[in-house]
Image (cartoon, rainbow, N blue to C red; front, side, top):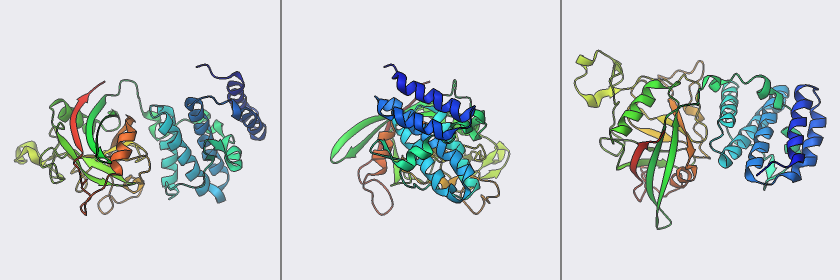
Length: 345
């Protein structure tokens, strides 16, 4: 479907007014007049991203309101990705903002909405256009080095019970092999060897994460690296001194700049350099930023986990699973099964 001319003109003019003419007020008027021209969710997603871009820049300029503005911007990136989860540019921008918030010790909590039922609030319109220029003129971000082309993808066929009904679905994950080569290699090898087939998501915590991948015991007490990376139960040793394959672990790659944002896929572990086959996925409302690495964080006493991929389709299943009833050990009352896992790209 073609973009309405009024809306496209508004997008173009707003970028020009901010980037070249430094007149965000005029850009605001242009966007306000074109809001009614939005015809579909794709156009709404782009507008949400522009709102988040603007909120990021406003937070840089207005230090006193920085926390609120950045939390609103983060929420709008989330909303945009819920509409268009494959938009890598939006995800890069959200990761950049998450990193900036980490540096300022600002939580990823949600602030006041810039959009209400799809319509802009007055503050949302003000925030919406102040700084598209930031991302357009300085796209060097944490994930600025990410080369998305050719990244492998893995699809998990999952089965779970929701409201008494059996549900089958697919969750597709894009693996960031340049940023976490060992974790991605191990995950892909386990997948190709059918190790994740008929395994379960054994731990589910609402608004946090869903965890699975225990290829040994299915309950969270097992799981090992698919290759020997020089680490044995978290200790750096020659392979001949690591007596069993079940002791093989993956060294940390948590300083790669990838954050625990919506759809993040990360390695579970029992301490630094003890990563194995277990992984977890952050749902749309997941609050897992405390597991990110940041400069100065002591990962020997505070948890730092390696993010090595993001869900690009099937987030509705991640979200559904995250809301399932559990027992007092956070295990789903009805089993959540990874029926099969396959490399799809």
